[in-house]
Length: 330
Image 1 (cartoon, rainbow, N blue to C red):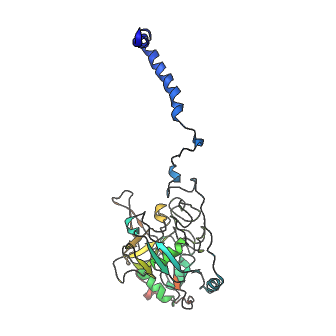
Image 2: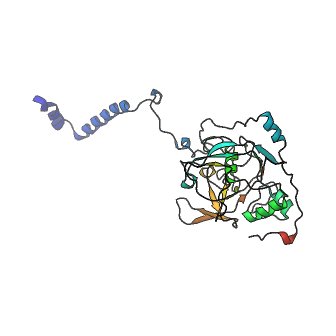
Image 3: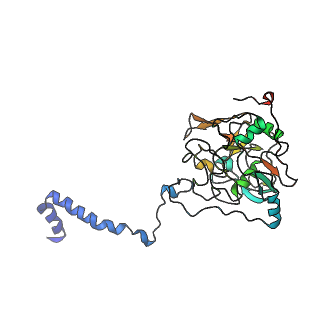
């Protein structure tokens, strides 16, 4: 029959349904050859939870964590002189910004800072009320951070604090938040709810300071809970700049706020995330995912105080506030 003989048998002696069965058997025999065992060393595609910044609290996480910064004996003495409620931040140089995130976080550049002190916790409502005589917060609780305060409200608080408070510069804020880490968050590259209040674990409210784990400098809630005002006017970063004690431009339209809040996504809590706001505003718009119309308003902007370490630190001296001195609310 020649070379056509086998095919002739198939064409004339095998029913059509049998042909499909034969093909099915052949497929089952061939498939294992293309499916390598996971233990053969072939690279496996990562799950969504393993991709940087996408993991939730229950997701598998790479080894990560925080190791407190070791201080010299000289610096330990400075730390012991820290004003009440503040932590000593050893100065140094670091890479500020992020070339792999949003455009306003570019460009990475070197920044050098002197020693300074920073509040261990965000300013609480009890502390604010003691100085200012009123509480503007939306979530009322003495131990929670004060929120819905604008930049000028804070300047009045600073004035009444008798030199015991100033806002940190944006560079000081990022340096203190990093704790010398070079990862997405100060604890690693994957979100970990043990370190921050954010949209997945906050139950849609602020929380008392100190309930989450601190960073390498011993600071709490540098990520999440409430956004934090800084002293700098917003401006873009410039490539190749090396700066010492940068304080931002002398004037501008918006001030920089940092850190994210309890209603922020995991991505918004990355160390380098920058947001800006007119200093008169106590709220700002939250845009719906993928752009578009405003979804809701952020009401949760607070702050923490800083002091320079070069001069002897000032102690807090709360002042009595009359009703006439209270700033307008709204």
